Amino acid sequence: MVMVMEEIEKVKEVEKAARVKEIEKERALKEHEGVKAKCPECGSAQLVHDYERAELVCNECGLVVEEDFMDMGPEWRAFDHDQRMKRSRVGAPMTYTIHDKGLSTMIDWRNRDSYGKSISSGSRAQLYRLRKWQRRIRVSNATERNLAFALSELDRMASALGLPRNVRETAAVVYRKAVEKNLIRGRSIEGVAAAALYAACRQCSVPRTLDEIAEVSRVSRKEIGRTYRFVSRELGLKLVPTSPTDYVPRFTSGLNLKGDVQSKAVEILRQAAEKELTSGRGPTGVAAAAIYIASILCGERRTQREVADIAGVTEVTIRNRYKELAEELDIEIIL
Image (cartoon, rainbow, N blue to C red; front, side):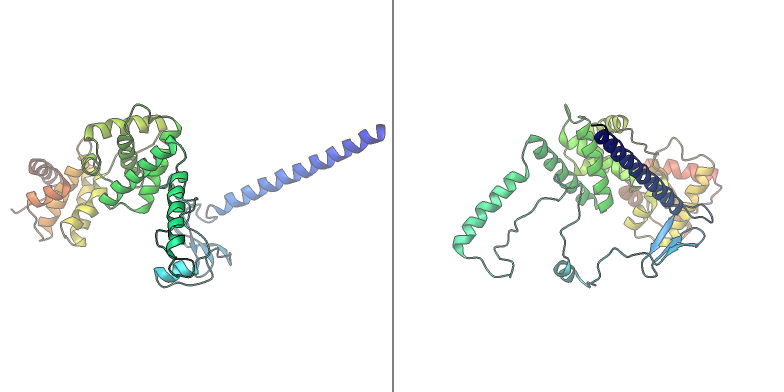
């Protein structure tokens, strides 16, 4: 009996030592990764992977931090979408914009087999039943059904606004967090989805106004604003105020203005921010006024009505803002 107890103690000591070694190895690995996460020369965290040269390069000072690393991408090349789909050996990537994160299977609507041959009429009826049950079992309960509806609503609004993929993914993550914290109860799904999309636009620096979100949503501007304030407070979203400079590229593109007009408008806004002329004023109105002044100075005049229509503000707002900017920045405008 004593010998058995001694053997058990020895086994415990060996396991404990192995566990200690494992913890030390994990700590060393984390420290090693932490060192690589920053440039040893200038301390910058902006490291870029150059896959053509297999190097990890600092974007600030140009130091090669690591070289000859392994490329985890595919070993084949594709020059169009069809080649990419044929040569790919895996499914679609995981996405938060689908209620099951895109991990479930889908039965295609085309009645063809894996060889591209047409399916017989008898098998077609069976395939129709399978497709119907597949759609039903993908959504198992009311929570998933509501989530699927909300995410499809998010995708519809994002498509109408022409928002990029990263904004859609961020909006879906914000909405899922709101569902986990039970913030949906007592509020409309459309309202929370629109508020999540507005928060995602601000997080990703792709600003859209509440009026633009309200135009493509099925709820009012007031409800979106109220829901957005509640969701951002409960989820602790740290969102900085929108800068007028963020609106300049979109407004100048809508007015078909050249790059020098955009650069001039950004310079005017930078000078205005230094003199604190932008604080306490709507960013869209200030941006529109700066673009109006820049278009006149660069010889590509646009009327106040044209600028107001693109920016979604009134002519009176542009008139008041451009007079303030011209007076404070000593800009001569020949009308």
